[in-house]
Length: 371
Image (cartoon, rainbow, N blue to C red; front, side, top):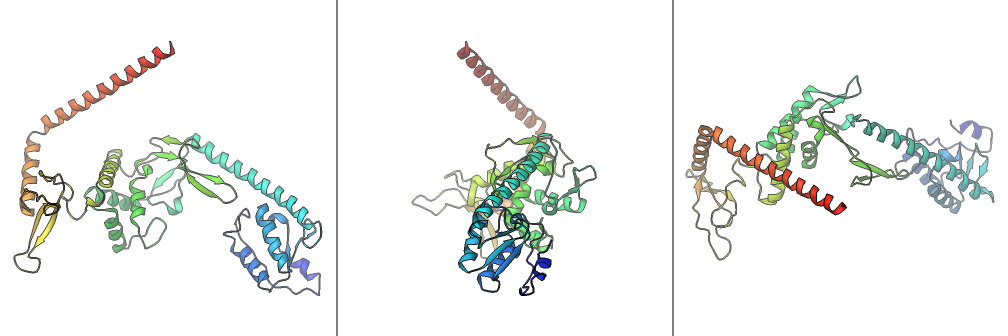
């Protein structure tokens, strides 16, 4: 409700402007553009009296209320709070404002705690909620659960497929921009970090890790990554998946591999960071010979071949040779795939049995200690 009617009752007062902040909490002044503009105008000498409906409308943060009022006092600007009947130039004004602001702040704290409790109760019950306005691939369904948006899901699948085919997150982001695809927040600009967040978000495989972060201060609304301070909940098959769990796990393994390689990884070729020098253990990289002539050829050689005192003895390879060797190796594997799969399964079973044995031994040791 505007204080304008109150101002009209005083013919000697000159109305300047109504300053508002629609739908913004008064617990912090940082994002309150209307409030900040009003204070700026007052400090610039455009206003000498501010009429506010109540103390809680001015600010629910005691520190913000008092510090702002003291700044205004220094510039001879008074505030009047209509509901409480408080004038800041009054001797008791600051004391009353301190009390009323504290009450308003505690009310905000109570509301914030109730809202937080509601969010955490929903998480505990396994109810998944997404920031749909900035989340690509899903919209809120009629049952309240995430529902796949087909055209957006194709973008997600393209991102996962491209990554597994060797493209870097930067290259994928550039490709999406060239195609005119909008980012999750509806912007034309894509960042490698945005692509990485999509590639590592378990919600795309139909699961949900809830409470990854939490609000540490209800006044500043500052958030912190959850490192065990509050409970987390992992829900399997909480909603329909866009990416299969197998593809998702494969992407996580590839992500970890590339991070371990660091700058050695390159997405320019299928063979980048995959051919290892038998002499020094470094990766082979592609080089171009005679780049400006008709004899132009792409060769691969050890990246450390001519570095240091020892030159690697491994020969260079033409790209056509590598392609042929790869096809030959794949052909041999395909002919013996059943044997390879049986051997891999045997190793996995042995590792599993070893893990179970270790767990059993650890359990026996713990029982012995208790006795």
